[in-house]
Length: 137
Image 1 (cartoon, rainbow, N blue to C red):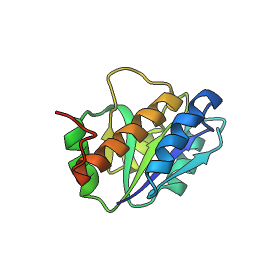
Image 2: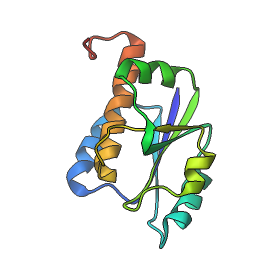
Image 3: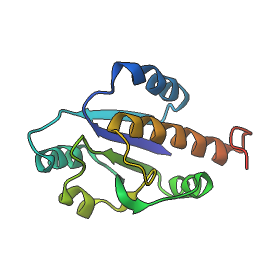
Image 4: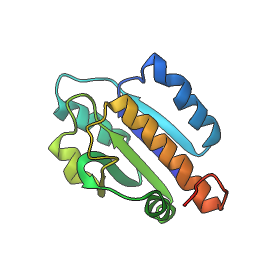
């Protein structure tokens, strides 16, 4: 499985170490950062330019999943791009052009924190697929 995360902006200094932790564990994952734009519509165009494969936008209106459901979902798609919008959220174009809308939580998450939560869940999915004891029921 190949995974790309396309996100607006750089991750904050205090969360960079957590991101690096997961990037070392997930060799088939890449992060592409898009510069913040004046509008979320402009950001949306930049995000979509970098998206490939099956596109999943992180959105509070999306579907929530358990970790096992997420692992099964990830396993079905050989190349997934997860899109994380900036502080103003996602443009309607991103929502419309995405294959799937995923919600990490009913909480509104700051985009840096959403990135770390997503990284942990991708790692957890990888471990579930491999059958390791990392995930406990």
